[in-house]
Length: 266
Image 1 (cartoon, rainbow, N blue to C red):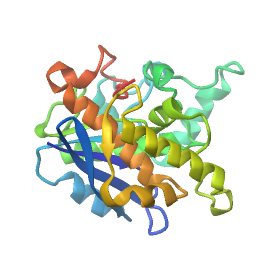
Image 2 (image 1 turned 90 degrees about the vertical axis):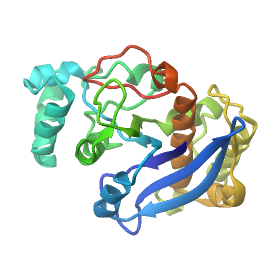
Image 3 (image 1 turned 180 degrees about the horizontal axis):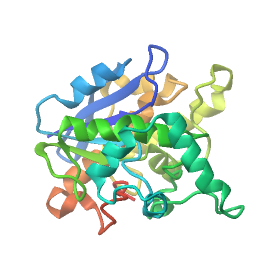
């Protein structure tokens, strides 16, 4: 089975694209076979349509908190919610989400999905630092359009499986140190050392997911990339491989709210 990890961005460009790590499991070792970066959504949409079988972990939220959806009186099933979301502009989303937050008490501004707590992820309605709401807006409807299957949420092509992944969850299981920055002036030796530590732990299988990785010719590149887009794609691929090992048990997913979704491995 081909497994992929996708480090997504809501505004792909030549400077910062959508990064994809691809590989296969062999004898309980995950081999990294390729890294690629897509600089526009057309290329990404075409990539999603590639024939299966494949399974991919995507670093983007797949849905919104039920609390927010019900407050806004938006559709309460995932496909219809994605179509409604797709029809909104980013400015419209921001205004509605900000109004929701402004009406709430300090310290409890954002609504959270149940998966955010165990994964340590940002609320999917957050539009700044990081703007994951825009990642949801740009990415999740594309998964629906592409006809992929999302276990527990949307059944479509059984040969193309999409799961929500979060690389920060894996990285923090290894080190709490910052390991990346898009600002070149902040791509420090200390952050490079943190990436080196993460790569070494992945090689040894020293994470809660216990998958050993072989990076082949890409190890130096993963450590050198100060943005860590490449490494984040690899971390998503690791979670996809963990899910594939548990494919007969709903990809390792617990019972979860099928409107909100769940981060694989959390």
